[in-house]
Amino acid sequence: MLNCAHLENDRKDVATSRSSFARYAIFYTPQPGSALAAFGRSWFGRANDGATLQAFSDSGLSGTGFAKVPQVPGRYTGLHAQFRAPFALRDGIGLEALKQRLISFATRRKTAETGPLTLAREGRSLVLRPVEPTPTLEWLAAQCVAAFEDLAAAPSEAERAAHASPNLTDYQRLLLESFGDPHVLSEYRFYITLTGPLDKTHLERVSQALWPVLEEICNTGVTIDGLSLFGDSGGRTPMRMIGRYRLGA
Image 1 (tube, rainbow, N blue to C red):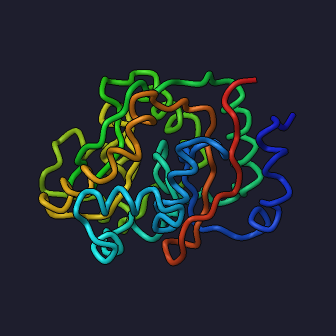
Image 2: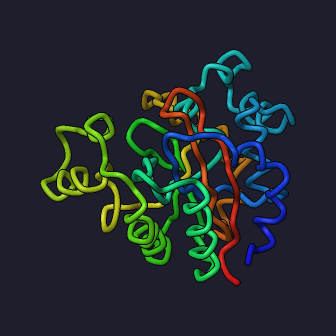
């Protein structure tokens, strides 16, 4: 049986679900209507609600400087946190099988809390991440790997190369070889990416400017209440949401 969230998305996603995708990913996206979703729309729409622009102005960043803040990589669409990195399906496996697996998977999992969040650096990007460790989210991510592994094709050389780095540990290299991503299982950490690469000074200034806008959200934390299925045409276009499926029966 389809859950309510799937029914809510069914009409608007029908055209997308008929499309042919080369790769798929499982993300958390904010519940529509939530404070985080509203922020995401304004942030990636370059703050058309004015609140973030005012915060940047108060922090001494001009509108021109704000416009130059790099977004997350163009192959993604909107505010999200990754639970399973993009993967191709095995030969003979179609989108409908993947959707039904995710619907069943989500129904049998409970919602989880991030606890308080903070603005932090991840590599050269600005992210929102939990202040304290989140074993429940790390376990959910590990289950997202295990539950869909039999549907996923082996990672390609290009996928491995995209995540390769001389700084990887031996264990991370094994994960990269097996899953095409070195940051899975025990290496996974939940975070929501807000920007592309920034130098240290710029990152700190953007963080200071965003804090007044995000302080309440950070103090309250976020409920992970659903998982979203995204698809793309092999990295040539932004990933598009296929459906958002609520956790829990």
